[in-house]
Image (cartoon, rainbow, N blue to C red):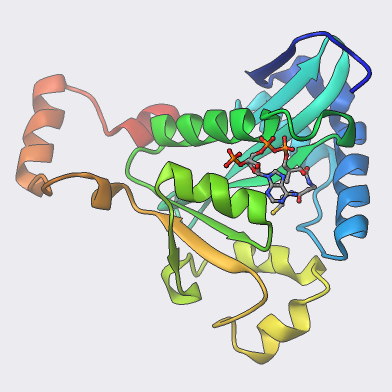
Length: 208
Ligand SMILES: CC(C)(COP(=O)(O)OP(=O)(O)OC[C@H]1O[C@@H](n2cnc3c(N)ncnc32)[C@H](O)[C@@H]1OP(=O)(O)O)[C@@H](O)C(=O)NCCC(=O)NCCS
């Protein structure tokens, strides 16, 4: 790394739109290097994620260091943290982990009841997912939202996924199920009672 400046990891906003083209190029270059495909996203898509506080950016002064964004699927029952990228000049410094920790916390805070899943062939991502409590699952356990699976069409391995009827592919499916992290399940009537006492809708409705 050329710069000694401290790397800051923060929830992005509209002021970070100027980094979007660099982010897209860094993602495309990394996919080329790895020989994989990626869910292709437009400038507008990432800029909107920033405006909606659904993106995390890492910066070293004015230099782009890393990025990831959050997507919701199936009526917000499922969430993914997607497009994780660290610029080659800033790798192996723990930045991906800091980005992943922040997107994960952001997702858990906004959609506490959603299942968070990951479909990846990256060893680093699998390691980070495991540390956060994701478990390996079969593809059947992921969302059936067509919009999510549409993202796989840009991948070089898409013919494999299609041939196997979406049941298997090169990627490993991993899922964080919030219900599994509670020692006991709170009955629905108690949840309704709590909502009445607090006089407000569920956290998901608060945020969208
Ligand atoms: C994968 C990537 C995001 C990692 O970024 P990074 O900032 O270098 O990662 P970190 O330093 O935060 O490391 C996080 C963990 O992953 C491990 N790791 C990092 N790069 C790795 C690699 N190439 N292979 C295996 N493990 C790796 C680290 O050892 C660390 O694990 P630990 O906490 O047990 O020590 C980065 O290399 C990148 O952008 N690659 C290209 C795009 C990509 O592959 N994205 C993932 C899409 S699935």
